[in-house]
Length: 416
Ligand SMILES: *Cc1c(COP(=O)(O)O)cnc(C)c1O
Ligand SMILES: [Zn+2]
Image (cartoon, rainbow, N blue to C red; front, top):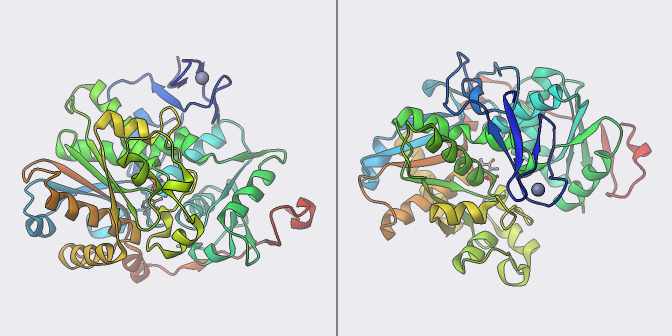
């Protein structure tokens, strides 16, 4: 059967290696079914170690990859005896070399490789931050073309630890356009010949790239953790580690119990938290994210403010929470800032705002008794080391190749 097949979680239809986001029959997620049922590590420095369960033919050679270590100082402060930190970012002292400083880069490497192996010419995405930076970086390393559409407010997040290359096509939007406008324009560009839409959570390469955080943790710990903590905006990370845990369970060497997902959003924008409180599969906008635009503006970690997360879809976050008997948290700005300061002072590395939200949710969980003192906990700090990176690297701002007035402009005007 080759290295893997894609299988629809609803109707069971199978597909080969394709850059495919949708089933032909329904809107369910597809999932990769790998021929290797046992995780066999490859001799690669980063994420390529986990080739067994990545949907690409060629092994990835990047040194970017997840790391896991056992916390001492922070764990002691919380009274926990088995707290592990999963860290995606730059922290050379712990052999973490993800230079765009978030786990979005774990998604970008296999995605660009899959694009190349399936004959795509260029990838198109909309992003105001970590995702755009990650894909731009991989484009700079591989020469594969990316078209990144950013709303005006996001352009400053698009820096690189190397000089930008011509393969990176950044399209900025004039003030007044928001993330949704950027998504709409990216959708139109993706219809041009040779262009492929990146696809978000529907992109199997993204999910399985992110899932390596759980694989690395299980290998480091010797088994799957009892609990998994992460801050979520789309929930893709939660879905990904759930899928990775299902594969580890089938492998047999890492335990049979799936880690309990304990996921956090930040107030006042907490649609998935609200829906999950009532165990609802549907997010009801009037109830769960009333005045969404205003709520988004008031949040501390804006990365966590996806307005159309893959929550209710078959194979989405709701299913992952049900299957793992999950818990969700809502975190205030003050709680996040306090947790950030505590973590950074005790562990000696800077973390990004969403990681501060995740850390705050662990503090809450300990207080509420949602974890046992001796249980095994994985805290996924999905972004960090930005301050540390600046000590070692010069950062370059990516300059736009075009500016769009709005999302309906004739594409010829952009001169792509
Ligand atoms: C994107 C991102 C998240 C949220 O991830 P999802 O699982 O896609 O919701 C959390 N932390 C960081 C650092 C991120 O970049
Ligand atoms: Zn189907």
